[in-house]
Image 1 (cartoon, rainbow, N blue to C red):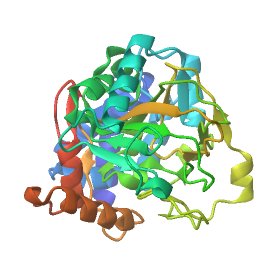
Image 2: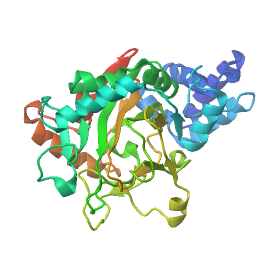
Image 3: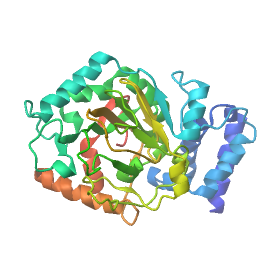
Length: 367
């Protein structure tokens, strides 16, 4: 430990000599990692473990910020697409809404494609078509299908994940090298009275076996107007600053959709802090994977559709979730994936995500 601290001290002095402390702290951290890689002489995996040890991380931050004039930004990167006010808002709240980011022609294209798939006019091999729990035995149509996943298998729907404006904003959180790691089109039909159209409050990182969390972001675009009445997103501002919490299926009387796990034991005080993200068609919210969020039931006679993509820096690394709160969902997802794709011989939870990941900008590094 003493040797490690001396290495950190050496690195900090090197940075100070070059006046890098006056740059954005995120940039300084990345350069320090490179220097430390040489000083430690170990593998990158060991280096990341060392870097993430809280006492050492805090020590470096104190040294770097002692002479820096800029605010320390942890969750965003210096990029001209974000104003200082927008960066500050995301840093404080864990989400940011950009109005009118996607044009109507693209929205109509995605809605039409969903309709064709839900009605059975178009078959996409491998595309996951999910039904609401309460309607799972009904024939497939717009009132029954509540989600499409693995959009990378469909050229039309995956084109959302490569829209330049979506990638430009996502790079503000992930950096220049990005992988699309999780893709969905979510349909919330009118609730049939069971309230199964709800999505429990959860953290997306619970599902992801890769880190660091602050280089992952979700882009979620409203395909039509979303309101409290039709089940808009609900979020707990600032919850992204906390840790990954335990999840499980909520004990709802009407049942719950498959893999819709929720955070356990949220307090009433937490619930009182929630905000409702009402959005117009084309509005896009970017949010952190530890942000606690969910959505309510659709109490209208219409539909509430959205399309989303999670992006991660390709420099992220896979982790073993054994013995962590993620082990429960990992076993469930791996079992389902092995059933759906028996020919792939999936061995680990990371294998599932390696199958999904697609490079959308820059260089492919780890993911």
